[in-house]
Structure formats: structure tokens, C-alpha cells
Length: 132
Image (cartoon, rainbow, N blue to C red; front, side):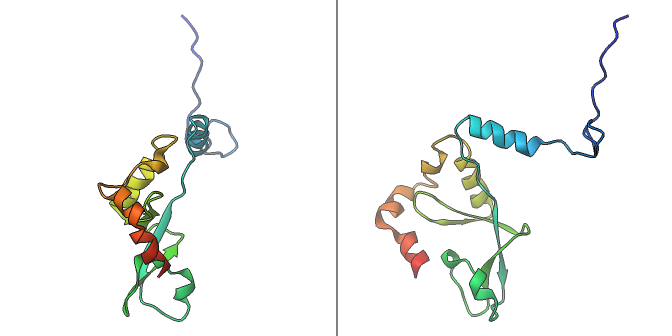
């Protein structure tokens, strides 16, 4: 009989005995940096009714109305990203796709977000709307 080496059980202790959880996020970031990919951060927004305290946290690119504005939040609500090429704001599934595209290759941030991305970048339509 061959004695087999027992594998550590990954759970709350992570096999370390000190209460550490597995460090898969750190390993993912290391592997991305080794491949030359800059990791992106997740951003979320939430629609709220405007008050006198919300304007300092509002997202300029998403516009506003008398009954609703979008503010940045730390809790997960609606994913939000802007395209690095044309500055188009992306919400929800578009934002998730944009983030995956940014992390897909070292030049992922230079890839277009859609069929009109390069045209919008030339006309600077989204930059003008964001500045207004």
C-alpha cells in the first residue's frame, strides 16, 4: 500500500488552521498582471429621488430628471462602466460585458463596445453629454 498525502480541506480554515479563506481573488489578480492585463474595478449605481445631499454623488453621464438621478454606491445594485474608447455609459449587462472585454486582453480597453463605437469617439458625442 502506498501512503497518500492528504489534501488540505478548503473551507473556513483554508487548510492553514488560522481561519483564512482561499485567496482566489488575489491569485486571479496576479495572473492577470502577469499576462499584462490591468485589472478593473467594479462600479455600481442606484436610481434615487433627488435631495439636497445626493448631487455630490450623482453620475453625470447618466443624466437626471425631476424624479430620479443615478448615484454611485458601494453596494451592488446596477453595474456601471464607461467605454474607454467612446465614453458611452453602460448599465447592467452592457457594463458586465464591457468589464469582461476590458479584462480579456492587454489591449482590451482599446476594443470597441459596439458597432458605432469608433464613430462616437470621433464625434465625441458621449464626452459632450457627460460634460453638460
